[in-house]
Amino acid sequence: MQRREFIKQSSAAVAAATLAKSISALPAVSQHKLNLLFITVDDMDAALPGFMGNKLGLTPNLDSLAAQSCRFVNNRTTAPICQPSREAMMTGRVPHRSGGLGFTPINEGVPTLVGVLKQAGYYTAAIHKTEHMRPPACFPWDSELRGNDRRPSIYADGVKAAIEAARAKNQPFFINCNLNDPHRPFYGSTDVYIGNGKTAQEMDHGEQGEYHIDRELTGKDIEVPSILEDLPGVRTEYAQYCNSAQRMDFTIGKVLHALASTPEAENTIVFFSADHGMPMPFSKATCYAHGTWTPALLKYPSMGKPRTIESRTVNIDYMPTLLDLMGVTKPSGMDGLSWVPILLGHQSQNREFVVTHVNGISSGAQYPMRAIHDGRYTLVFTPWSDGRFELKNESMVGLTYPAMQKAAETDARIAARIRQYIIGIPLAFYDLKKDPAQRVNIIDKPEYKARITTMKSALLEHMTMTGDPQLDNFKLLLAGKQPVVRQPVRS
Image 1 (tube, rainbow, N blue to C red):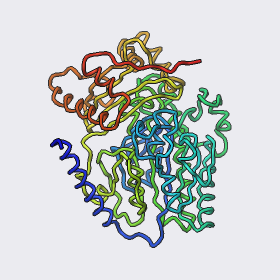
Image 2 (image 1 turned 180 degrees about the vertical axis):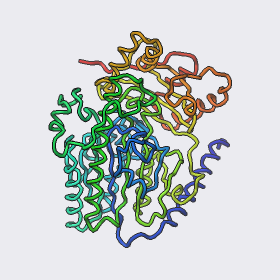
Image 3 (image 1 turned 60 degrees about the vertical axis):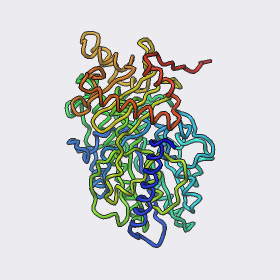
């Protein structure tokens, strides 16, 4: 056996022993099985919640939950696109190891959180987004509420109905409550939502009744994120996005109230996460940092003092963590790590690196990207970037990208930023402390050579170990050759 492989196997054995000891140290919280309310939101940027430092007061209900929770503030999604992200959450696997590469089903037979808990005797219910968890055989919900309506009471009523159904059957429950806000179309916008052809006004009934928020922000009230440009159209659309986030938060409050009004509240784990970042340039559907940064909240019975946890974590960790907390045997084959050792103070469980992935997008086009993060630096590999092929995705609709595109006609700095986005950079390296917006590629700076070499090697190792379909392209790039990305043939 090679020495490196021996070290890996020895480390794995030590980690397994530590985890087993940690699980045995969990407090006995109940004589009954713990329930799970798993809340997700769609396209929420990590900088929106108050508990992450936002000063606009957009998320009082989420902030209240955060004050009672363990807050994982350096968490990332392994895939910054709706379907592969949700399938990663539910399988504990990176996309190419589950089969959920883009808007595609996972492979038949891959264990899911739904299937494992159902087999363990749980009543399983989902509210919205079930179309992003496929095939149905791998996601055997006892009840599904489908749709994309953003009316807050739909979610609260759905949660209460699922709890009542589980109690009637004398079963513990797993409810996956998936909010559609703050996805496009945004509150007050008139852009067309790709997929069903409806505007926000039509989807949200003119923002009347439950669809209305009391404090409507305008472009004058917000601060433009550093990844975007401070332009009137950007300000207007970002304010609309913030208003969608306010309605999202109101919905979360109603959902938590629905749980609190039942006898099951004290015996229920509450878990919260977004699927990925905001649907704007340099975020959703890219491996730039804002696309994958998704803070998570975990509140469970007898957990002790709420606290902020800065360990590097990933959404493939959700399934192993929750199963450990619920005392349910984990299936083999997951790539994620349980957070139980971290929850019990074993900070040595922190990863050195996190790898994120993009493959296909909703149109079916292939824009593969990979990024490896160490907390300060990120190395971004973009195999589709050949100097000619251009990016086209959902984040270009609305007001923001067209405003940037127009400004680029007379502003060379913005023109360079547009080119970075739509033409890409085959291999880039960024210092997120000095350059959080990832505007300056420092791949050729000699002072970073050692770290770049280390991160190249770590990414190559990850891709090799997981059977990444872009491995050959990464090897081509490292050899100074042009990667090849083939697009689907359209009829």
